[in-house]
Length: 276
Image (cartoon, rainbow, N blue to C red):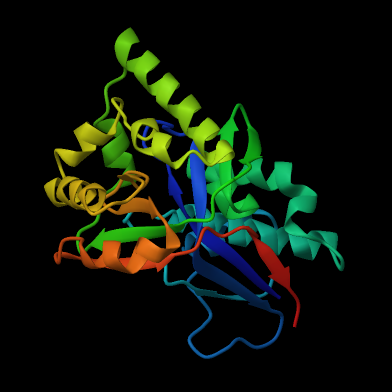
């Protein structure tokens, strides 16, 4: 079988640990009971293989992925979803589809990942809101592209999260609640003009930018070049920018040269399974 799972970008500015979007960059897990394509099998310590084994998966496993590690594009979340979907498919047999066990996979993947904002869009596709163990897709009245600027350096999600304060002011909390609510409404209504304000943040981005000044510069350059909005992808250092399809190539060309860019679709399918 082959399980294909999209990368993701989380937080979307103010929606810390609560919103994520699936991106058209895919990790694949190939499971075979006998042979394996050249280059495999993948080591047992890989997060996809560990998730697969934890749920009782058997067989040789090969993981193929262009998703960069440590860049804020949901590599570990995608890997864990893929491994769990593959194991669940073995348990359930013919006819199984990933969302047939969506709640269970979300619960297991969240426990492994520590938070759901990456695993939910990798499982469901599109933009997904998540809280309290639930995940709900956000209807989109837009058909944009996502331009991501990816620098050569990495960040540790664990270290980045530990650097954030344990408490925030009431003013900052209200600021982010309002922006996150506006963001969901703007995406649902197709209100492009509201997106830049709706992706402002006071909880995490500025603190993370202190350790990644090039990322701050890339976000500013993208907004100056006409992006609808932008945010620090996950814990960074990647920057994600939302824009009209006709503007994506020009926007990518305007970003700093000390990183590379990808122009990506919003993935709408989420995790998929095929048998061969």
